[in-house]
Length: 340
Image (cartoon, rainbow, N blue to C red):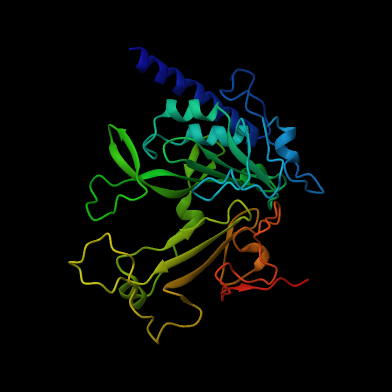
């Protein structure tokens, strides 16, 4: 009974928080709602200029931030919140985490709520909207990544979430590596998926992934060349830039009976594949660049929008190369040199 009561109370308070968020989007205040995350700091409405690393987080009461801008000991997985501060989540990220419908994510509401009210690693980033973007990695199971993409108008803002959305209990051909052992009634094990959420004018958090980040289409020949793989969304630069990238692996050359735990052995790249798609043993499917209202599809981007590893322009690292080369010495054929 106590467990049921706790969840009921949590649902009630999260409903109030969702209503509060909707009121915020309309520019109104709700006199009756008591926000669940009143102790979580609200994000600033304007991006400070000039940008000073960690100034935003410290102004929001972060418990600690790295003293050394080259210290990467705080790197976390799923996008890597590189050299993050530690403190209570920005309020809007906490509200999104708690408001994800329970039928979407295999983490109970009370677990998400409790975690959102505890200090977590997070970082502020200059974005394309009026206020700064934020990225956080919440310590639940293998980690849940949250990333805001702010708009000039609050109603344009969207939120990326990477977490246990894909139950693999009934998918025997899916390798268990990287699984979340969720052990909830609806699912035992799940894989991470990337989703985009947005607040509606009525205060409901909506899954708008297909509207904002639908997977690129493949030709029938490309589907044969890459089956059974699906387009992969690379999120590894999100702690640096508001950009993602679509790629897809070439199919495995091994015979079907070979053990599934072997390394990827891709087929040779066929001659008919155009240069606009060739990317090592993968096909390049384009970049998704946030512009303050939507994700633009681009074939190419400048290096400032797809920096090499360790080359965070906000928190420079001594391992960043000075010659524009990637760490393995190869240049990305779809990343252009920045024009000074």
